[in-house]
Image (tube, rainbow, N blue to C red):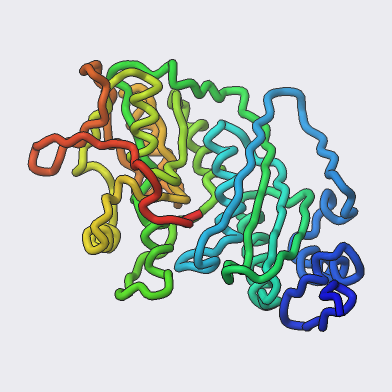
Length: 345
């Protein structure tokens, strides 16, 4: 007998291939498990596209996919990660997020309870970021590796008129500022992986940065560069800065905020925390004279309480990222060759 949607036994508590067939089960899945949590005027008609009304000006558009394992980890899950990751990519482009798309690929066997938890997390993160899921799609694939769930998002945002982000504007003496403690997301995800032989208090820093970035612009500081240090971490963004500016970046190890737990966990794993991914931090470059007012604005925001100036651009050649260690030595920081921690986003 052929194994098609018409012959499958339908479960009330698990995803089956028939849920992806585009028929009645697909309609029920969307109506019962997505719309109640994500409902809004753009999404509710369930048409093929959402039509947005935006003011004249510049728009930012971004897209990303999320395959993190496990799909739930200390401090977050794949749903919160997908929303925050897309919102943050818009925010560091100087844009106010307007709307997201959401494509969810589920494996057969995923429990409905887990799906409901993830959709609730998506809804909560979207509300926190003041953005709506305007349109989306669902697919069901055969059970393969037990990954359970993968998400692809896209986001659109309106770029602020005062956003003048351009690495070509960076000059000797400019200061690198970070919004908070590094390495928490990547290390938290690793701590949740099956077979890990230790426990840690670490939780992911995953959070929507749009309100923090707005406060940074509103401070009046001349923001020349913004980036969220996700894959590749602080080391990756620093290498990009040096490559773009042809200047040397001197990082002060003693100024880089990192929690005691994160530092010890990285040491135990033999991982440099500078290369570990973050999902709720932002890096910016400003003139030295603007650093104090920017830090004051950032530290007044909940997501910027541990903001710090951590480096300076200098004219030394050849251009390198140099870490000035706590004991006064220097070491070269390089962009990681691959991923130290696979599937952290």
